[in-house]
Image 1 (cartoon, helix red, strand yellow):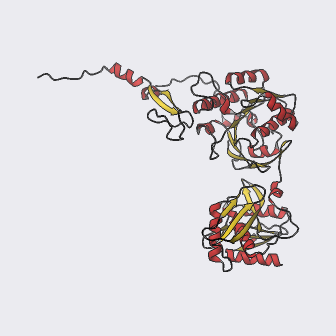
Image 2: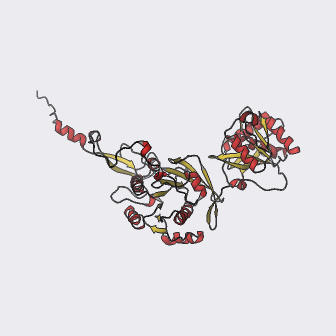
Image 3: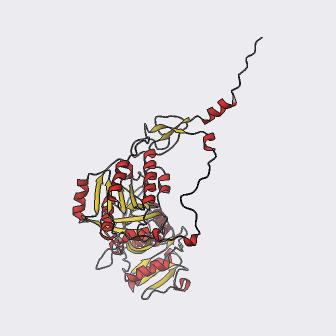
Length: 480
């Protein structure tokens, strides 16, 4: 009887097979790597986005790298000058506030926002201010609009400086050619998803292309010392579109937020290697462009001659900035079934919790069958727990038809047992309320002048332990 036996492969062939590239697959929309080709990406649900890529085997990744002479030797830290990393103001004060003083030569900034929110308008103003004050040209490269369209916007804004250059390109090689010709100090690329890199797989805007284009621009910016601002798209949930590595490649990540139906715009810092990452800049959109708002608190207050039931003022924190904000509530008629709870600019879950606390912890408010509508003034979004007390007082004021004194502010988080909990940055909030002329403040227990050591002139601060005490003090302030 004949037995078959396998012929062993030679060690050389085994090593060669280990070094052979193996096929791999990657989603060109989100970067997910499935084990095999599929028609629809299981991560993002995009059809036809799975493309084949090539990765090297483990033997290639484990090769020994030989040393070489570095281009610049390592030096003691005390001998290194920090002057090249100093920020240069852009001329747009609110943007400089978020950036930590301005743009650093060679820094790469990623500005992301929804379509139509005003990213191109803001950056055109930044390029104009840079060209007028920095002493070096600025270059705006648009991959979405023609130079004539950008020129029309620039005329409306008055951004026609002679050192402001425009170009419309979608090829990275052409963009680098413009950099050689103009030699700008500032480059604005609108947007990075529209630029393609020759010799790289994938379509423009795909994961592979965006990653390669961004890496190349970061290298050029560092080499030539060009401050670079990249415009990025966002997904449906407001996150930066493209691979997560995109945010790690750049130095600063900014989110441009705002409601299209409101003139208020916010630039929020998410990542900043040159300063704090929790700053917020405020802007106002108008027909002639965009302008900074160094004191935006007045936008979030209504100016009425007499107190109106259903309103209460709080002080919200946007980054390190304290903003005095008015909360309004309307109590509708009793309806059978499940009444509506509608919010605008507030957290719907926290409103439902505050209503349950008022229903359970007070004797005079019956809200289980009433429709409740709550909103902020001016289009600002306030979701921090520190606004709970103001929401509770606004709802109670509307339900009882009793107006709260216009000179009162309420700050505090409401717990399920009705207690008013501590919140952060109370001294900064009280200072902002004092600056705007408020004379009475309700704060959580342990946040008063005796506990913090901060006394605001002209402002009476009262500590309240629970919602019931807050309602009583609000009634006294309104009567007296």
